[in-house]
Image (cartoon, rainbow over all chains, first blue to last red; front, top):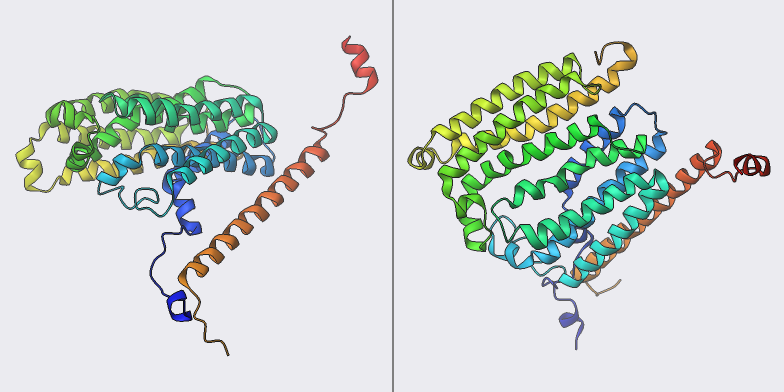
Length: 312
Length: 56
């Protein structure tokens, strides 16, 4: 063997640091960090900044770990779908067993460290969230029922509740409302995505509502959940985490969101295909802003309360 | 002067090692910071004999 043969520059299939980081679904983690931080900061109990930082970080690591477990289990589906084929496991950069090992190790570490940093209630909720996402959603619901993302959405809804529990040591109406906000927001957000990504789910055999019941039914479901979400989101304004800023944000965004859902409901496939799902894509983009702005407003209320501006 | 060109694999391994090293260093710093906060706030204090007696 010569130096020349040793130094070939062909890709080797050995994972880099970024590949392991990608296993943790960094984009989902950023949403978890944000909502968990809002839950923690909106709580009526002051938390030391180091404890707050550590708690949010361990919640994010727990969420990332469940993402790695999801990628381990779903490698076969991910391989088929264009959106996910480049992920570390289906692309062959990370071995499935490595994803399993990383997910399991980080799950245990995150739960234990959150218990040490804050309390057992928060750690218990984090453990349940990981179990719910990795086992209930990924292994069971996702391949079984078209209601997969409705029930599975609970996993993404827990972080603000865990953040709140890290500060207060318990669960309250406000933390349940933050949970409900994400829980009811998830179906219209995801089904809007499915409306313009349908062929991928069909190819992978995932029983998305668009695949099992068709797009007409999905459009009706988007509207139904949006109508359910609006009073919940606006009603939250009148609790201790709400206030005039939140109310203004919620009224404007829910009016836009309901209008978007009605537009989706009124459209047929011919029109949607003609303009390349412009309305559906716009609704999906709005849904991202919707969640960010609602939690941003909760944070603003909490941050401004000491100055007599936030809250009622 | 070396004629050996660094293999792409070695670059990736070095990146992985440096990344993991930084993560571990950050983790140690965080645990240290947490410990300092918990100890100075008295979270880790053992209950005194009088307190234990009063509880009983």
